Image (cartoon, rainbow, N blue to C red; front, top):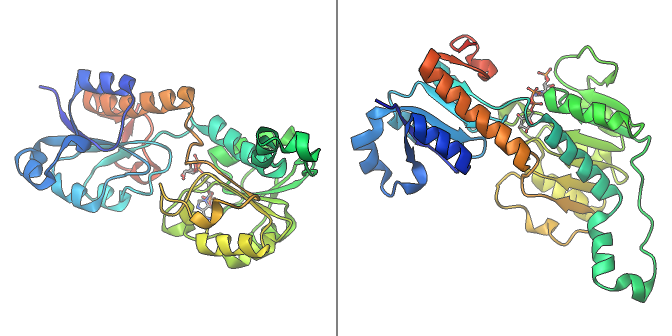
Length: 321
Ligand code: A2R
């Protein structure tokens, strides 16, 4: 008998094919009346496949008493209450590592796009402005600039390594100093004061909520650029918008927002801002690797009781192969 699972959010055709071959899949998107469905199926569900954005809402978690595993398509899992999961003995997995390169690439793309005014200059050509009004105004180089990375884990480390090619002077802020050659800054405000670019790449959740507040934003200042590829919650979005409007913050390259899929409308007409719709890992190649790992974790859990990539909070209850 195939185990029954709840699928929250979308899945690629390749994921669906593999999931369907091993499980009876109940897509949440096809359930019209959740309460009625739960009364007949809730107890049969043994695992959940979800993603970093949707996570597992508390009422869904409560309604599924026999869930043993939650597999998250994404490295960030702040939308899943791991405390409750550990208390219930539920193993939570995510997809670390396989997305490092593409998330780092988008962070650098946003740095380049804000500095070289990519969106403005694309428009300069398309609108006929070039022929009518001549060359576009000069832009700024990222070569040899000072970059502060907030969060120097798997992805932050990859961003730092890639930025070495641009001759950037790299420092970082984390709660614990790392064994790396980059300069450690114990104080985030001091780091923001010292750098040209501040890149956020920490997890979301309460411990990083609004770490980039008004004081940090003002320290980065009118010549500074904020790049956020972490979570919208890491930045005080209202303060950031106000600082950009008032010229207290120079530029912003943003892939993540506090209330996705909504982004603050005030940003839409700002020339000093480049926006992407949470697509840092959204390449065909990386999403395939993330999808494979998401499904591998579930299959492995049911076939051998082990998982490949448990979240750190579940290290004590997860068996790895
Ligand atoms: O603080 P540490 O020493 O645990 O370093 C981690 C840092 N970090 C923080 N830094 C400052 N204040 C905090 N409250 C704080 N909490 C965590 O973030 C570590 O250097 C980094 C996270 O690295 P990893 O766990 O390797 O995560 P990865 O794979 O780089 O992904 C980061 C995030 C995901 O959670 C998604 O939200 C996003 O990137 O895609």
